[in-house]
Amino acid sequence: MDTGDMVEQAEIILSLARVLPTEPPACGQSWAAFEDSLWEGIFQLKEPRVAIGLHGKRWTNQPYGAFHHMLDVLQHVVEVLGDEKATVGRPTKLCVLLADDS
Image (cartoon, rainbow, N blue to C red; front, side, top):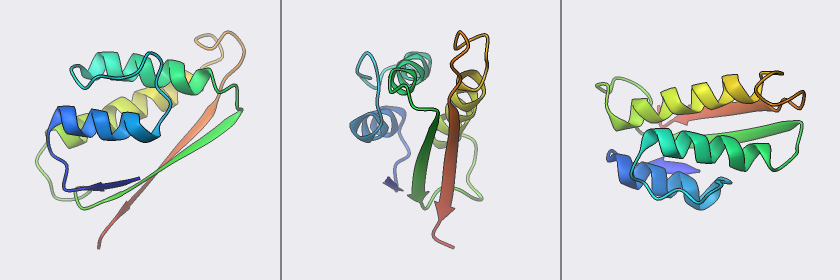
């Protein structure tokens, strides 16, 4: 997914929700709701391994904001999906690949 110049929370969440599995569908209003929705959407794939590739201009030298909050959300989803207990013995190895324009 190309993240382009996205900087606002709602546009980031809605853009990700267009290409990533979310359950229930994400609406862009809350990071917590998006995190839960993404976790459930990926978990329901029942795949042992999933990769998400993000390409964009905002990976380095940006002040903390919505974009970096998205990275925090993705990191937490990676951790929880990999947890045996949280996934009731069916963990998913989620890999998030980041590429910038440098």
